[in-house]
Length: 575
Image 1: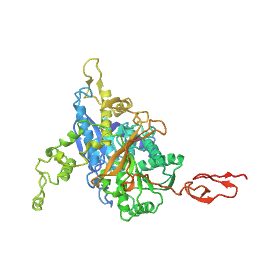
Image 2: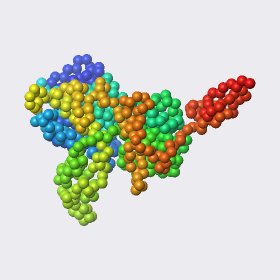
Image 3: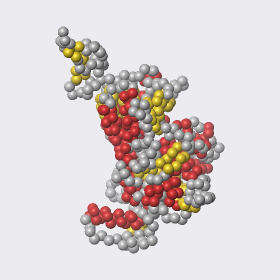
């Protein structure tokens, strides 16, 4: 626990905020007590060393209006279980199970884990960060023997940029490293602001450039832009707009929202999109936000739009139910192989599922039954079906067990391995012959893990893992180009149609491997312009107050000539 540093931080805050210059807290006199009840992790396992995990298992947070007459109730994550969050958690469990069975990585040491739910909001993510740092103790009392170690060696997570920023601002005070699998905001590369943050996923600077090149590649000059009003959406869209402007691309509108905005604001965004003239829309939006917008867009007829998507929603199975996205294209991370992971998922039994409420809920939702132990007489009278225990995930068609689209789960896997390698560098000594010797009783300070994370360089499943000076993947960025195509059975499906490699020379980053199915299944590339090209004999005349892509076509004056389509200037014709 960080009792000593917590006391020092308290002294600093009192001096800085209150102006007390003579504050002295003796180790024997300082203590603090947790108000309320600490939340236990949703998934956990004991170990010699423990790794923290923060993922989003629920889409919303329940808040209670405070009347200041009693102690406030703690926030709770609510809503249906998100299978993506459960997949990330299981990937972390799978990686730790593999590591615990290895003899060349942390031999004779058992790794444990504590995994918390952030429900993709800052307060819950920060709360999880504090709990992972301090543990579950209700009272902290400093004394001379107080160890300077945190409850966990390091933390994997969070899934989104904004909660990750909240977490790393807290964790950075204590030097606790955090390795995210999906926080892509380019702002997190700033090591002065976020010195303990690492990630196994590329920065959005790469994706913003890729999206601009994609729009340019297909000749679209007139587009709409919508983004999540978060660090992820605002930073990513700002990077995209900077590159797009340099490429001569005009933006008809650029709007932002989040799912928690008042309904009237979401409706306003829907109306802007519905009445726009641009037929191409770039959406740098998180899936949970986009789902709220689509509900409004489907309430009224609208022109068919060509959607261009960021990685946050391009492979979101829940959005396949919205027919608006037929023909959508966008980027996702490169697919990786994780041998043994699918079997690990399928090997889950009813007995194992009943041991934790989170997995128990998944099991009951998947098979439409109730595990024994909590079924009331009323439930039996209402015809609640009891799980037999013979249910088998192999017989279920679920996105949870579909490992053909393994991308982000691999980022969790690599993040877990990176922390394990860093821990190995601290507690294990290499031997010239035989296995390394590891000290499982060693008190490890997070700053030691932090320094080792900067040095990790290993290969797992054929893929290299190391970080550059910004804490980003040293390998750069490779994206797959995904197209939402209608199958022969009439269902929308994700199809990889090419890739984008940022390391290739400019102009050669794209490689299309198969045909793209556009709006309504057409083979022709959609057209989106503010003004049609001016024919020979006319020239462009800028429209006042509008972007350069919007113009009128006017007849050439006497002594002027335009001899090809789309001329802006004309040549003097001498008689």
